[in-house]
Structure formats: structure tokens, C-alpha cells
Image 1 (cartoon, rainbow, N blue to C red):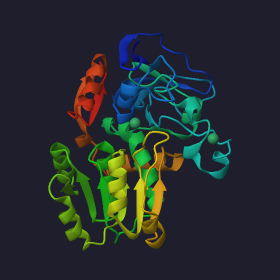
Image 2 (spheres, rainbow, N blue to C red; image 1 turned 180 degrees about the vertical axis):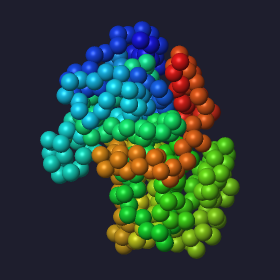
Image 3 (cartoon, rainbow, N blue to C red; image 1 turned 90 degrees about the vertical axis):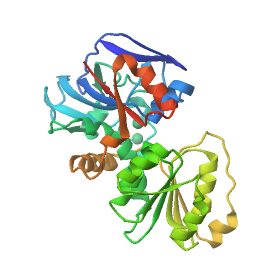
Length: 342
Ligand SMILES: [Zn+2]
Ligand SMILES: [Zn+2]
């Protein structure tokens, strides 16, 4: 079968590998559709601590079950499914505290990093994912379900914040995650603002009914006007740069909630004004990955068409063009590329 094998930094090759055999608790799916992700691009450009070379890249997928292990009872051959890229072990220190996203053994079943991923004709869904993070797709319009994993990460973060309908929310970053976050928050409150700088992406957000602020157009005045100079009730940083982290801290109001959604490099230290945190009672949160509840919630949101997914998939390409797809994201030309199979 054809598969996009990542062999090292900036070394990806579409090549022939054997179709894998599912173990008793596993499922083999024929990939129907997949999406590129910012994490794929990062892995391609810089590598990733979880990657085990060579590995088939890709972890956002929809596929048809073509084979299953003898212990798999809840799925049948011929069914179309979508799933997350991992699942907790339910057995470690964090799982025992129900903090499933922090599972110590998450890497063991991490699709597209440690296990072969979905930029491939076929893919194994590991037993742990089959058990809790795999869902049947019943509609003909299955492409939108490939957004399950990123949306689950977004839901996990938004759930931490307990946003109220009378709160205003600022999302910093107009990438796919920023736009997904905006859409999910908009289902809670009307007062959602997206701060970004890429005009094309700001336009996409506006078409989705999200209020936008252009960072290159006197945004400070705009923030002052919107918040009567208090700052936002909730600020979500979704860029993953030091500048954006600092800006997020600056724009949250006293008594407000701040979510650091975009990750920074390990070891990087940040300087925050202790006075504002203590006397201003700022609640600061981090968010990582997803948990089975947020995956399930994401599945239901997609199923009920509660958010618009199509506008984030800015182009479709075929598997042999995977490197081109990743580079088009690096250039800022595409947000997410849909990979269609022959
Ligand atoms: Zn992803
Ligand atoms: Zn665990």
C-alpha cells in the first residue's frame, strides 16, 4: 500500500509498505479522507519528541473498516468510522485521577507519531482507541468527521474555562485552532472576538459570524472600545509564541480567565506581572490534548453541524502531494489540506 513515511526532519517519502494485520483488539481501516494538522507540519519541519522514525504521518482521519481482530465486538466490517489519535490507558497515576489527557502512556498508541498514521491507504486503529475513542459515521458527508481530534482538543480547553453566556471572549490567533475555538465559544456567548493578522483568515472568521480585530490596525483602541478599557473576561491564546502569551496576559481583565492553548518550547520561561495575578486575581489555565469526554462531545458537535468545518479545509490534494500540502501550510497558503484517496 502507498503511505507517506516520515524518515527524519524534512524527509518524507510516499512509498510502498505492507498492509498491516490487525491484532485481536485492533481494526484495520481503509482511509477515505484525512486532514493535515499544524502538528504534522511541526513534526516534518523540526521533528517531535514523541516521533519514532520511520513513521507514517497523519492523525485526523475517516476510514472504512476492512478487517477486525476477533475481540472487537462493537464495530463491523464495512462501517465508516472516525477516531481520535490516542486514548488513555485508564491505569496510570493521572488516569486514576480522571485526568485522562495527561495519561502517562498516551504515547504508546499515538497515531502518526509512534504508530503509523493515516497518510496511507490503510491504517491500524489500536485497541485502546477502538474501545473509547472510535465512532461510527452514518452520513454520506463523512469528510467533516476528520476534524474530530483538533475539535476535541478545543472542547477540552473550553470546558476548563466554564465560559458563561454573559462573558466576552477574546481568541488570539487566526489559525485553524483559533477559528475552531471561536466557533465553539460562539455557541456559548455572542461576545466572541478573534484577534489575528492574516487578512484571508480574518475574512474566513468573519464569514462564520465571528467578530474580528486586526492586530495591524490599531487593535489597542479597538480592545479599549469593546471592553470599556477593562480587558476581556476570557482570553484564549492560540498562537504558541512568547509574544502572543504576553499579549494574552495583557488583555485579560482583573478577575478574568486566561487560557494558554498554544504550546511553547520546553524550558522557555515567561515573565508575568505578579501584581496583576495576585491583586487582579487572574485565573491562568493551560490545556493539553483531549480526553474521552471531549472526543465524544466533539463527535456530537460535528454530527449536529453545530460548527462549520468546511471553511477550514482550504484545499484538497492527493496522497502523493503530501509534502506539497505541508509546505503550503508553512507558507500560510492553506489552513488545513484535505487528503483525498483514489
Ligand atoms: Zn491534529
Ligand atoms: Zn493512563
